[in-house]
Image 1 (cartoon, rainbow, N blue to C red):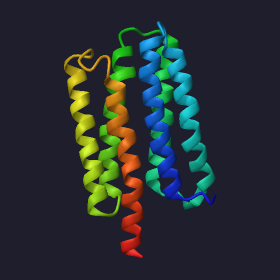
Image 2: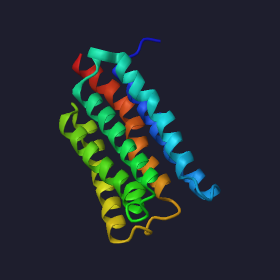
Image 3: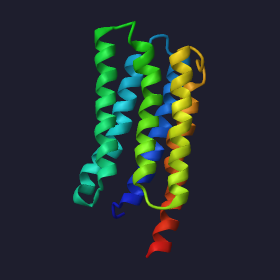
Image 4: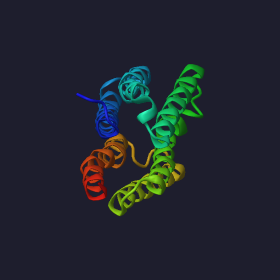
Length: 173
């Protein structure tokens, strides 16, 4: 299989969706699941980040922004976990990921080609912003299902973009 930006997008969507669903599972089944969740995310995100590196010059700036931001946000989570900062944990492990999605998808909407792709990512950005706002008001508001919501509003848009991107490229080429 030749590595393309199309296949990379599929890997991002699959790993993000899967990692959020595993996060929800670990959060429900493990009493102290932070370490397991952090290592799950590290392993899951190594796949698209490593594939981005393999794509090399064929990757666009958008790929590198997402890869870099993902590494930084994950490192922030490890730092908060290592420091055992109970005051920062609600923001770091919950609100940050909605803000991350809001900013990332807004940027994506601005730079992707194709009106349907732009609408998809703008909608995802808005949903992530609403989620961040809800958690800023009350960090327990989405408790019990927030990672399922994140899988739906972060992972699924990338999966939906796979056929949209293919359609856009077929129309353009």
